Length: 295
Image (cartoon, rainbow, N blue to C red):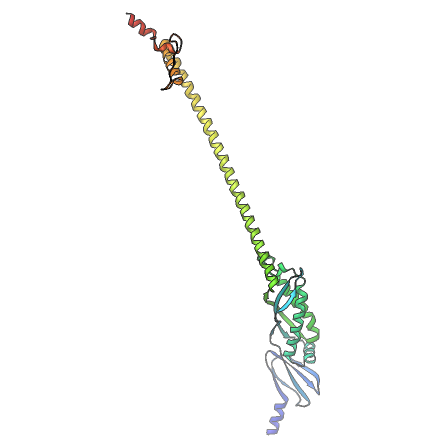
C-alpha cells in the first residue's frame, strides 16, 4: 500500500497560479502546462518537472553616465519591470538560455539596459531631459524607446517580456550642473524681461488712454466754456443794448468805467487829459444829471 501511494505521489504534480511547468523526458521538453491544477506525469527520473516563475520581476540599471545629443553628460538610472512569457516556445527559450534562473535573466537585462540607455539618451537634447518647462520634457518618449529596444533584444533570445521601463533617477555631473544652473538662470531672466516689457507696454497703454481721455475731457470743457462765454457775451450785449436804448449817456458812462476798471489797477498812476474818452467820465455827468443840476 505504501509503495502504491509513493508511486502515485511521484506521478502527480501541482501547477500553482503564477507559474508554468515544463515536463522534460530524459532531458527533452515534452509538455508545457500554464493552467493551475493537478497534472500527471511519469515518475522521475523518466520525467522531470521544471517550474518557471511567471510573476513580475524588477531590476535597476544603476547610475549610468550617458551623453545627450548636444554633447552634455547626464547620470541616469532606469528601472525595468519584466516577466517570462507564457507562450510555450518562449518558455522553452527561457529554459534553454538561462537554465530557468531569473537572476541570470535579470543580469542579462541589466547589461542590456545600461547599453540601451546610452544609445537612447544620445537621441535627445539635454533640454528634453532637464527643463523648467514641463511641456518640453520628453522623458516619456525616452522610456518608450528604451522599452521597445529592450524588448527587441530579449524577446527572441531569452523568452522575456519587458512590461515597463522608467527613469527613476536623473542627476548631473558637476560640469553639467553648472551649465544647467546657468541656462535656468538665463531662462528666468528672459522670462523676467518679457514680463517687464509686457508690464511696460500695458502701463504705456494705460497712460496713453488716460492722456487721451484727459485731452478729450479738456477739449469738451473748453468747448462748453466757449459756449457759455458766447451765450454770456450775447446776453451782455443784449443788456448793454437795452441799457443804451434806455439811457445812452448812462450807458456811455458805464462802459467808460468798465474800460477804466480793465486798464487801471490800484497802483496805477496816470496823467491824462480829462476831455477825452474814457476819462471824460471823471469830470462830466450824464446829460440827465446835468439837466437836473441846471434846473
